[in-house]
Length: 226
Image (tube, rainbow, N blue to C red; front, side, top):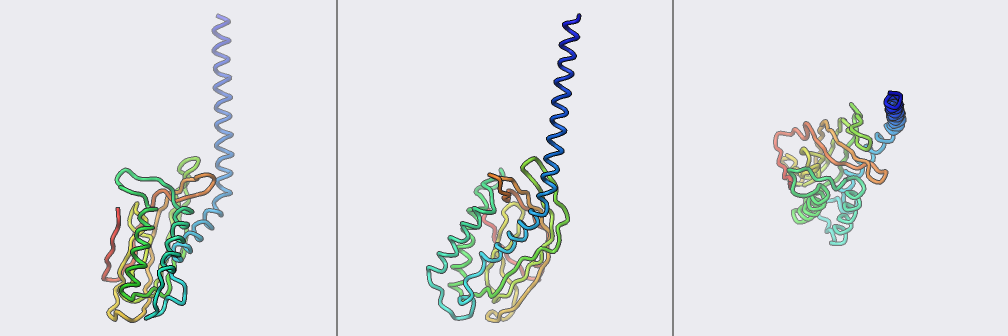
């Protein structure tokens, strides 16, 4: 009987130790996460800024009639590859046939070639963080950020640009709705978005995304490579 009681007591003690250890782990983990929240805001602002940059050719090539050399397009392709390697995981949802990395690289090449061939100009483009409505911890190395973005583009009517849009695919291209095809005009739009980040080798990267709203301009066309 004494041996049974000893075993029971030993089991209770071990369970208590494990429980205390688990509680301590969650306390420390939540404390670390609280310290990371300002860093996540900085990460998001940087991501939005660099998203706009991959759309833009060097300034001297953002004027009507200028010839754009092949090496300028090739440089943007390399820049885009560095961008997706920095900000996106290899995570692949079950209903998607290839990764966002592949989508973005394909679409960026297509966009710049199409704009060059059709004499379309993107003069300026920006994605500005309006506010963060929530940062929720999903797991030890996963977090969901909910936020609102203002997008602004100055371009010719048929210019194609990569926009943060479409659930799960992350990016598409959109045709802006101006009547004068050669005139550079500006449109603005505000939308809300969720992104899920995974921490990979100590770096936060995008695994999934979802958007509500977008360019509400009366005429909108987008293509998503799924």
